[in-house]
Structures are given as C-alpha cells and as structure tokens.
Length: 125
Image (tube, rainbow, N blue to C red; front, side, top):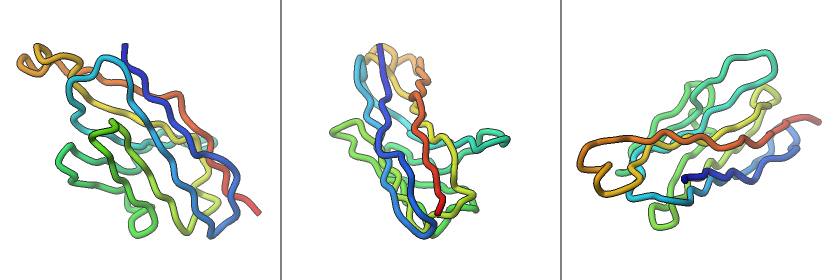
C-alpha cells in the first residue's frame, strides 16, 4: 500500500557529487522519520543520515560535512545530497520511512516501516 522509490544513483568519479531522491506514495497520513541507509560490498548495512518530520538531522561520522539530507513534506520526498564522494561511499543506498497510513493509525501510534528497493552508487575513476 505504501511504496518508496529511489532515484539518482549512478557512477561518479572521486570528488564528484550525486543527489538521491526517495518519493513515498500510497496510503500515507503522515510520515515521521525518513532515513538513508547503505550497504557496501562485503559490509553490513549502516545508517547514513536521518531526518525527522521537524527537520532535525543526524549523520554517520563518515559522511558529516559531505552529505546533506533534506525532505519536502508536501511531496513526501527525502533527498540526499552527496558531495566530495569517495570510493568507500560505493554502496547500494536504500531509503527507509516510518509513517502512519491512516488517521486511525496516527491516533493509535500504529507505525508502518517501509523500505525502498535501493539505488547503486559507484564512486570510481
């Protein structure tokens, strides 16, 4: 009933930039937090950046100062601006959201967690 669709991945040279987008659609009353995770080759999935509905952000130490997360609540979309990319940023980036599908769910705090399918970011010369 709810889908997250990511876009913006691709191949970029070290030092370059990419902007990822993740749009939520379907039965959505309100979205709480939205996050970006990544999983690199042979690595565990890690939280990259998170943003609350009020705009409070949190970043992994490895991306602080280089990545910026933002969201457009009217469009149910979250973005990840990635600058000064490094080869170690190569990974599948996945969007994650915690939301309430209906007003009843909001009143009872029945939270739905949804994941996107992921988009590959490759940083290489």
